[in-house]
Image (cartoon, rainbow, N blue to C red; front, side):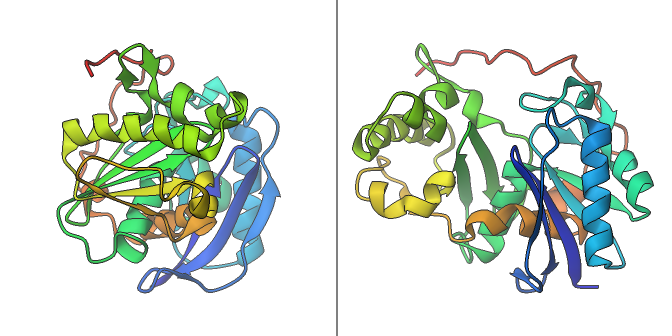
Length: 272
């Protein structure tokens, strides 16, 4: 089965579409339902079930989640209801929909999609996909294999928490023009370059729709920097890939879940 339903849980909307996982193309128009206020598990579960019913596809379903996901369990809840922490979300959605559901971190989903079908297609070595929006999501892909849950938006740049200082929300909050924001984002890329030496940075999230505003200003020291190509479809495509078994690093994980933390840990400072 190559056409799989992908669902992307976002802060303002939950979107779904069937995806041909051989080509990365949506086979029908996206359907969007507003995210319930507070994003509690029971409320989000109902929306996911509505989307599954709307499309009526057989087979597994892939769903993104804005937090740490390990073996189907959601282990952090930075921007959603705290009841998600420690929840077996795969089982929650599977019971609600009657379909086998597989969860993946939202930035990881976008990274998989961009690496396979977008700006990283055909690239070898390490590719870092960064989504600049409310925060900064990250996905590290090496030779097409995902290293999940990197959470690199929570690095510290000396005394500055990366996503608090360099996200798209920070640009709007601090009333920065695109050149000023690019200077901050470039500092962040330089730090990641020292840690990971990627072959390519792919810049996604909300800022990818305005690449003409920042492309000439956002620079790394030695790594190529390109805008993401799949835009708002990346999460849906990556979720479908996960459900289709197209994410080998994830399917190779151990069966037992890691012990959940009560909440997202405070970011740890790193040198730089």
